[in-house]
Image 1 (cartoon, rainbow, N blue to C red):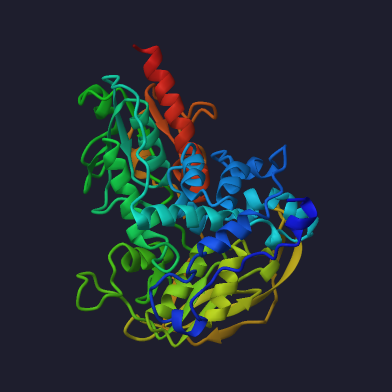
Image 2 (cartoon, rainbow, N blue to C red; image 1 turned 90 degrees about the vertical axis):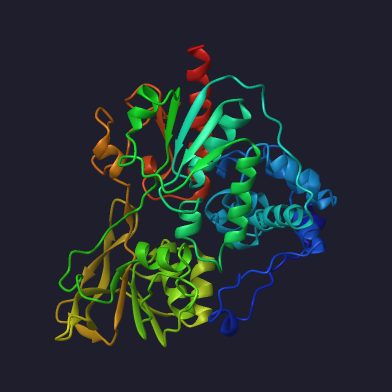
Length: 473
């Protein structure tokens, strides 16, 4: 097929639930490609010799290779290529910001002068992974002979899953320790069911077990056990720390202690991990707000706002102090939120939260903003407009202005270096920390980042661990 012929193929739109219907159910929004759609979309790949798309992939998937296989209808072969470097294609195909990574560098997108018309790499990746899982035709992964070395993996999010899998494939004996009662980290407590069905995460965890990884849940490292104890007392030869960025940030404004104010972290954890939306089935209580304000402009804010609708809110306001152009959330998530009825209040922010005489939220005083000069992030700084205060009628406020790194392990591990933000400092080549034999990766090192970036950290750490253990034989 010539480049001209490839350019003539229309991008394949993703089938979706109707916006009004999906806004009130927890089913997945995007319904996925058919086989024919996946083949047509994959056929749009220019098969560039320089493979520019790969420079945007943190785990270096052979993107042209798997797309060529998919275009030929060899979906099993496509998945085989992906799984050489990525353990979680069904997850990444759904939640990774491809428009800022692989698709950003796609030649097709550049030729058509629109990143939205780049080859839909993630959608094809999702299809081939889903097909194998649904038909039970996934191929097993071979592991190297047993080395006799033991590796402890702390946490069970994307970085930890990747590190555990790679260490197991290298022949090491791996045990994963998870604080919650379910594994998956942010994949289960942070990302809603309507974006990432939890059955997919459970399937990936089962894949870990098939590799021989042992999993201990309800195990709080830093309380149940100290990181150093794994090496000094329990006979582990190396430890990987992937405990994420689970410490919610607040704004420090009046009224944040009122009933009806939540961090997005707690709000989503109750709904996602604990399924509090299943009234009558779940043991955890949930606050069903009637008029909900969500503060922030990232993907977590979109998740919280869209979740509020599904929990029965009559009105949901997304309040963000910059304009739509500066909003860091994925374009697709913003589009879906608007379609579903979330009201966007741009260039506004909370000044204080108002309470009634019983300590419950009765409103939120906001301030209007205008954009000034660019700040260090390259975005224009929001400047408050004097005298522009107004009150938004709400009974619930969800604060989604970011998360800091989990502080428990740094606080309970002597000699573990952190930076000024509380992130663990790790060698950029091997991911080893200041403690020999202790490695770290993912959001605990990067700060809040993407699933695929965390996976890249886990992969690099696994290589560092394997090198460390090889040298110590």
